Image (cartoon, rainbow, N blue to C red; front, side, top):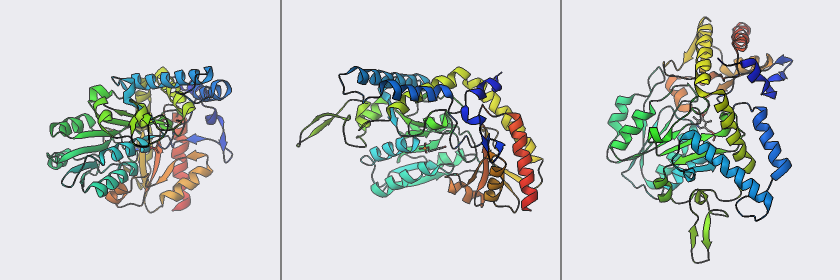
Length: 404
Ligand SMILES: *Cc1c(COP(=O)(O)O)cnc(C)c1O
């Protein structure tokens, strides 16, 4: 069992008030809060060894390089990648997806298919549309059902020998559905297609094993798993990363440069042009350590309890509809109140110190499917409490009274 009172002391922001009320932070699917242990690592970097990495002979540069590469190994171990150079530091999930979409531009042609799922975040739709426009490949979509699950029998129909790439998120940020990515990956490989999994929403809740999944590419953002903003990781199988062209040209990513020809650096540097977010990478490693010190099984068990409790409390409110009712989901609840705009509910909740997200959650196609403009989304983390859920449910009831 988690000692939540002690855990909450690690997060300075959870002690603050918003609009005169103690903060209830339920927007964890947008970004998680940062524990002191991670903040300390960032401060320590700027206090003691801020330097550019990989190119200095001086001690600070060496210390910074060592810390950055140690963080890469932490990420490697966490995701169980075979080699450290299969981990590319990025600015986040969106960056990682664009790197792969760009890399495949030279490999696709008219007649090829790219499959995405109906449950995608915009960052996992737009880059593929751009890729298909550039190459003439066709974009196909795995449809979803009313529970917010992908319809796998339709996926079977879409897969052919023309399928070159499949993109799917591990967990939907808008609904919380956990997608059956092992089956999706296996079936894609049967027709020779590569698979990229967007793990941005999964990594705060579970510890993915990229080798066991046999996934070709996996991307995540540090800021959704207790790390800082502006840093993330792209995992790619070594064979793929060797094959794909680099995304950006610049310093760090070259082996030799003349005006006639440039040869690229070895992995992972080929994909890491320019000065990276050094402090961010190191802090990402610290965030992974922090989450593992709490333990992913304990996190999942605790969050599932919160999810069950909040779901049944919310459903006791007349006229409240929850979107995304799969029995395979994480601690995200998307809902609406009959005849009330989600934005108005969100605004009133904020007045009570309660932070939720309202809108389409960067997943407009899902909202179109349900024929709604958006939802109110509450997403819970391991540092949230039952008392906070009580305050939230009270707040929703109050907002309903005021708005109907
Ligand atoms: C948050 C999120 C993204 C985008 O992550 P960034 O850190 O903004 O790049 C992509 N996909 C999913 C499922 C997300 O939840």
